Length: 274
Ligand code: ATR
Image 1 (cartoon, rainbow, N blue to C red):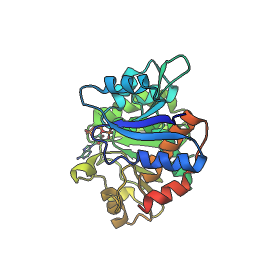
Image 2 (cartoon, helix red, strand yellow; image 1 turned 135 degrees about the vertical axis):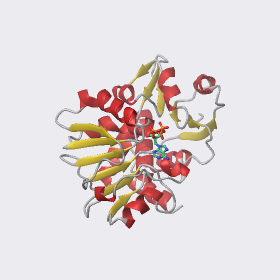
Image 3 (tube, rainbow, N blue to C red; image 1 turned 90 degrees about the vertical axis):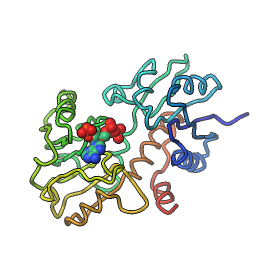
Image 4 (cartoon, rainbow, N blue to C red; image 1 turned 30 degrees about the vertical axis):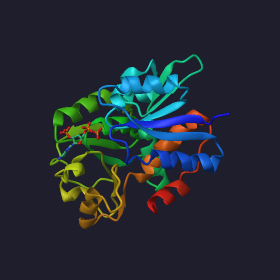
């Protein structure tokens, strides 16, 4: 019998770590599956997805720039995907319904747990208000921080997220601002902007970094990320990049598809040493 088939779809896709992560999960758990990378044409994401499932494929991860299209294409969305407005995980149920989930926010919160970061009652600053940030707000709010401030270059986008997530805020003080406004140390700062792709830094005050501030860059790279280096240079002592989040979101997809939760620590370690 052939192994069950999974893939990640994006454009470009050649640098994706997902095939390596999922093959490490498969050998660790003894699950018989193959996981490949598929570059969909920019103008035919839907055709790529339908073709994959028509060939008997079991599940897909979706990455840039197709997460919103994956959300649109699905017949049904999980609650967390509905709120995220984007999907990184697709699968079909027994009657062929195409379901969209989003495991990115779960991956972030799980990785913060791995690092021993306390979210309950924390004062959190999130930088950015794009698709990546939208996917993580509800899971952060579910941990009941004291406050969650969304700062963005385009203020209107941060304000729109505050409006969208106010029903999820419960006791958390949720607010929006520009980058220059925050001026006191936060317990946790999460960089969810793509500024570093252009070699930029969000222009936040150094005053947001205190001795105990935890800094988390959702980006990752072999060297310290640009944002984390900025924070270190301003006295931060606890900085983490998004490699753990990447592995944790993959583990949650794997659990959805296979019903087995892989151990993530050895996989994070192995990727870090690649
Ligand atoms: P993603 O899917 O990575 O979230 P996105 O939806 O395009 O991509 O969002 C990118 C985020 O990074 C946005 O918050 C964007 O700010 P704007 O909303 O003002 O566009 C932010 N961003 C991108 N380049 C930036 C830069 N050079 N400086 C500061 N913020 C930047």
